[in-house]
Length: 151
Image 1 (cartoon, rainbow, N blue to C red):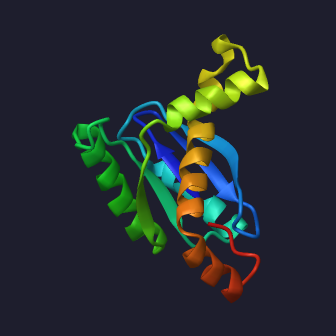
Image 2 (cartoon, helix red, strand yellow; image 1 turned 90 degrees about the horizontal axis):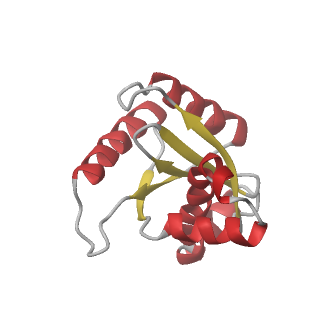
């Protein structure tokens, strides 16, 4: 599972059953940044229904590689998510994922006025796909353990 954590949304993507491609799934929305109960509940529901074994969470680094307040909030979210789910949560550099998601929407012909409703979900897909491409060996081991698992 790939997650793009934001102040009011969490973009969600899931892998295919063979752990080869990421599939943007949905955006979990909330009214305020600290209201996470329903967000965690939805993530836990997806973990159960999709047999998720690993979560890849975007790490919002600055372009120069430094972290800031957003990274700290994301790390807090990661810690809470690990405690609630018992799953490993890997942080993955998400720099330029929004740009890549925007480029995908250009190719898909999605008008600029409609993109906000898709960008977080597509960014989660990019985060997950980047991780899967970089860690083929880990995913191969997972696949050999049980073919129906999703990241």
